[in-house]
Length: 307
Image 1 (tube, rainbow, N blue to C red):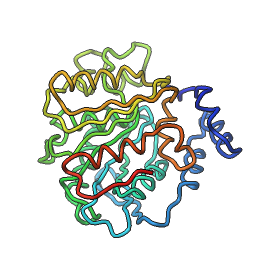
Image 2 (cartoon, rainbow, N blue to C red):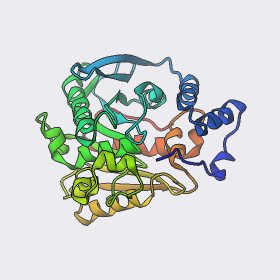
Image 3 (cartoon, rainbow, N blue to C red):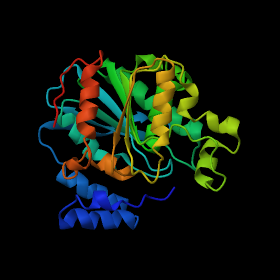
Image 4 (cartoon, helix red, strand yellow):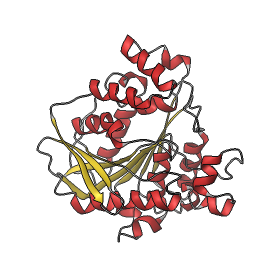
């Protein structure tokens, strides 16, 4: 899927030559340049960062950890970035890690293999391994294995949601979705079957038949025993239809699951993610909703504070 075209209501709220230039670069395809700018404006001195920790030597996969200074029993979020399952680097999302860590939440951002190198099974195995590493090393990084949340944006939301709904992925590491403290989805792909026949990437990732595609669709696995869910969605999303979040919310509610849906009028696909950065914080109240969700659920041991 191409990068979304940003809507005028969101653009009108952005000020500053640097940000406008960055948006133009993003639309031109220079994502790394924009993310570098966001990360530079989101630098923090009150957190501890650990970069390049290898969690899968076989596939040379690493992760970064962002933690509050002197963290002890703090909640942990494992964040999976988006990129249509074909692109992205963990370093681009440093602003997510620094923001959450500055508010009391340890953040783990892993890389994962992408299409066409791998398909569904490959990147889901990588994601499960990253969560298993986090669970095993939680105390070492200042958290607790009982306080691990999974979170993702866009394609990363699909990955995190599937970990939270389909038990086969974490089951390979002796874990269950119910051992997660919660799932936080930002404009994720949860209900997309049948895949459009003119979308070669999704057909390549998930397969050409409906039966194959359902293996990767989180809404297919909802049965009422999932961890608590927070679903965040902009109503002006031109890349992932808001119906994805609505569908997952309704599916969990139908089986009396613990889920919360927050929709943000006038907010687009990338705007929702970028609202976690310091310069674009006013784009949507996502950060406050995320922190409130983490603090409200029973596994949360450390207090988080609103921005």
